[in-house]
Image (tube, rainbow, N blue to C red; front, side, top):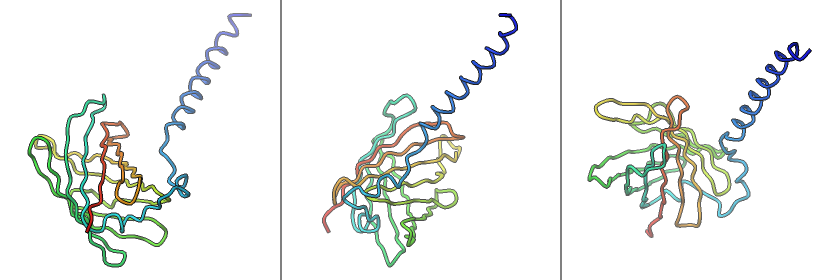
Length: 187
């Protein structure tokens, strides 16, 4: 009788393993922006990124090692629901980069954006003190350009400080994380 139950036990063990893995994957799913709707201060992205902002950041590889440090000097300008965010990066090794975002604020709290080194259109949503921004960056590495996905989460701490944590991935595999601290400068 025991030998007749062995295939059944194996099947049950396999099903239990699959269900456990599925439960763990659901637990690792991305945050829902709506859970931040009541958080204060309320983030108005076009107000925060209007004028001069400086950011300090790091990039950590998949194992958590800091492999790049940088600063970003930004100037944002808005006319109605259209904005331009001019970002100038300076890396610890002396290299520089520039990205110019062209942004649109929609009535429903969503934002879209384009930049020369972004494939397609970036999509963002704001709620409460949080903003989630997803896009595909064309990343040059040793003469080859890779398209990598970014999932940015920004959290307004107060009227002058916002923190950003971004996950970089390719084909769903996490490659590393970017951590930034934004500081809005007085006009």
